[in-house]
Length: 507
Image (tube, one colour):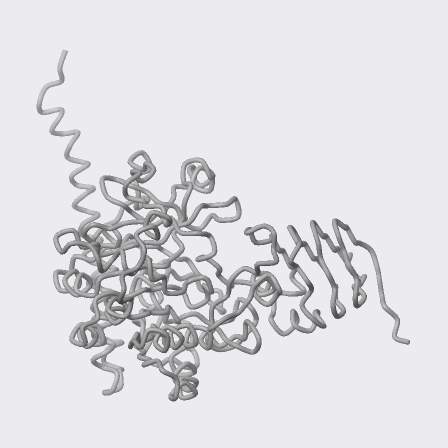
C-alpha cells in the first residue's frame, strides 16, 4: 500500500531544509572570505595592487567551487580505462616521419618550463632549477642548451618561457643574465599568489599582503594548473600569439627526459584544421614504483590524481592492472585554445585540497589544480604513449645519482641512456636518510660509481664510497646505527650484501 502524499511531503522537508541551511552557510563563508580578501587587498602596495586583484579573482573562483563540491571529486564507478584510440602509441606517430622543413613547425612552438619549486626536499635553498645535476650544469643550464641547440641546428626562434612562483622569481631572474649571449629568447611570468586558509574557520591566515616575517608561510603558489590563468593574465600569451606561435610544450623543469620531440610536434601542426588537436598528454607505461597519476575516462579523457581517489580505492589506483599508464606532465597545448577557454571562463579543473601544518602548528589547507586536469576542456585531446626515457624526473638524491652516473651521456643539454648499457631500463636506487641533502650526498661519493651493469642499489646508514667503485647486479649496503661503512676505492661489488662496520684506516 502506498504512503499518503502528505507523509511524503513531510519526509522531503527536512532534506530541503538541510539543503537550504547548507546553502546559507556556503554564502556566509563566501561573504566572509570576500570581506577578508578586501581587507588584505587594501594593504597591497600600489605596484602590486593590480596583480593581487587578478590573483584574488582567481582565488575567489577556486574557493567558490571548493564550497560547492561535496565528497570526492570523482565517482569511482564511472572510471574506466581510456578507449584505445584516445591513446596513440609513440611509434605510430614517429612512423609518419618528418617533413622537409622542420623549421616551419619549430617556429610555431614555445617551450614552457614549470619553475615554481624550491630545492628544499633535497636540502637546498632557492629554486630547484639552479641545482647542479651534471658536469656543473643546472636544470636551467641544460634546458637553455637544448633549445639553443634546436635554434642553431634548424635556424629557428623557439623561445623559452619560465613559469616562476614568488618563491623562485627573484633568484631565477638574477641568473638569467648569464644567458644573454645564448641563442634563446627567455621570458618569465609568475604563478598566482593565493592565501593559505585556516582549516577551522576557512578564512585566510594572512593579516596583510606582506611576504616577510610572520607572513612568510601564509601564501602559496596554487599548483601548476594555475598556468592557464597566470599565463593569460601576464599578457605573454597574447604577445606570443601575435608573434605567430601556435603551441606550447609544457613540462616540469626537473624532468630531464622532457626534450622537444619533433615527431609529436609534426603530428600536431599537420592535422587538418577541423580536426586540430588542441591538447596532447604524454603518458608512459606504469611500473610498480609509480603511484602518482592515473588516467580516467567518463565519455572524455580525464586526469586522475591520487588526492582525488576515495580511500577505499587507493590500492586499485596504484595497481598496474586497471591503470597501465600515467601522466608524465609533458603536455602540448594550443595557445589560441587556452585564450578561448580563459575568456569563456570554461577551464574546469578538479580541485586538489592540500592540507599543511605551519611552523607554529596551525592547520591550514591550500586549494590547488593540476595542469593536466584541463585535458577534458580541449577539443580532440589525445594521449601519446611515449618511451619511458621521456620521463626522467629528479626529485631526490637517488634520482640525482642515476643522472650523474655513466648510465647517461650528455649531448647538447640532453641526457640519453648509454649505448654500453645492455638493458634500456633504469636501475632501482634507494639511498637512505644520510644522503637526503645534496651537500651530504656529494660528500659521501669521492666519485660517482660505475653503474652500467647495476639493477638495484639500496644504501642505508653512514656509508661512503671511494673513487672508481663499480656496482653490478643487486647491491645492498647497510651500516647499522653507530657503525660506518667505507667502500674502498677501486672496489667492485656484484650481487653483494654489505653490513656491519667497515672503516678504512688512514695510513
